[in-house]
Length: 252
Ligand SMILES: NC(=O)c1ccc[n+]([C@@H]2O[C@H](COP(=O)([O-])OP(=O)(O)OC[C@H]3O[C@@H](n4cnc5c(N)ncnc54)[C@H](OP(=O)(O)O)[C@@H]3O)[C@@H](O)[C@H]2O)c1
Image (tube, rainbow, N blue to C red; front, side):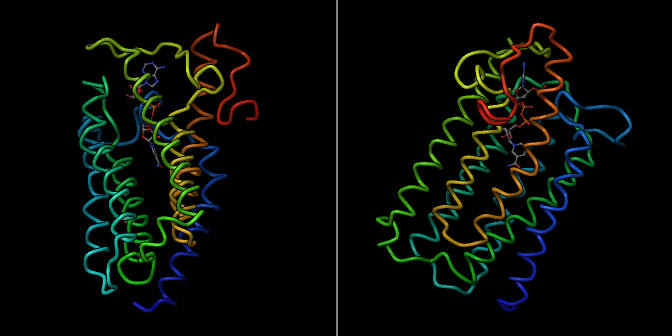
């Protein structure tokens, strides 16, 4: 594939995210607390996550290692961070959740597989064939240092918040409680907020447009989901804290 063709695909994927956003704001994604009948066959929630996210490390490894570009520590670094995140998200996170017995529509898993295919292509093909293979001086650049700090902060917020949510349930419980403490005092879904920050940090480090496509899509996926969660909390719990925002502390 020529760089020109890749660039067209990159723009098309970014444009798709921007166009999809208003539609996703209107439609509640039917998984987790929003799961409903009528979305076709369902599978176990935990195995669904393993399948839908577990393809990401495989796909990106394919694009990265079949690429002809000489690999550097920097390109291995970007590849490695992505793989680490997805190994956790696919093979560890689902088995930490207390969602035994819950189901997820197969159509959601299928769309997540497609999503991971496109995102890993944008990042992995670029790293394998086009760029991101900076020299070692990259690790001392302001772009790297700032991006890395933002990335680590995002991971911390995401993982800590997910842990707090998971621990709201005793083993065997499946209901919902009002989370409190940490950033939950300010927003309904700090786990989503942390994920957006994490990939923004990755994009700052990446220093090229392909790195921004994933945080854009993370935003497009998670802002509507956060708004749905926020609305759901208010409907479910009359005593839900009124001052708590949905997505961004003090703002939205
Ligand atoms: N990059 C992306 O585009 C993307 C897209 C989607 C998700 N993610 C990430 O994947 C992770 C999971 O996402 P998610 O949207 O499924 O998160 P979520 O709805 O907040 O749920 C996270 C876990 O906590 C449980 N939980 C949530 N709120 C609870 C409450 N009030 N009481 C008791 N248990 C509660 C959920 O159980 P139930 O499943 O039973 O509700 C689930 O096991 C997050 O870290 C998110 O950032 C990333």
